[in-house]
Length: 132
Image (cartoon, rainbow, N blue to C red; front, side, top):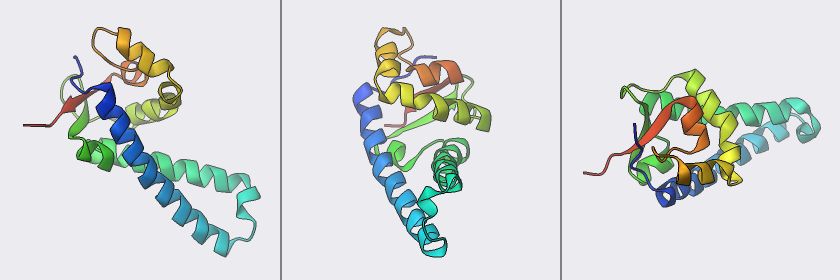
């Protein structure tokens, strides 16, 4: 299925979600650091922040089909059969998304007939506009 969400809209949602996730990680890190001194030197701290970030995206994608950034830019994520994405698909997207952020995945989108970046292509998900 072909995505009808532009690269500009994707980037807008990414920037919006970046600030939300940054705030979530910052506040959680502050609380953890108050409880456990020098927690930032502990590998558990990094794992916790990564898990928290994945949790935000996975729950948003699987349960509501949208992160807050996607909601603001009026698009949602789904499978080709219009069903909600699975946790496996959300993990695949999350792991591969850095490739898009450094440019490789979005360059792939420009040359892909379905306009899918690499992380959507491999996870078999696509973005659909919710604008009326």
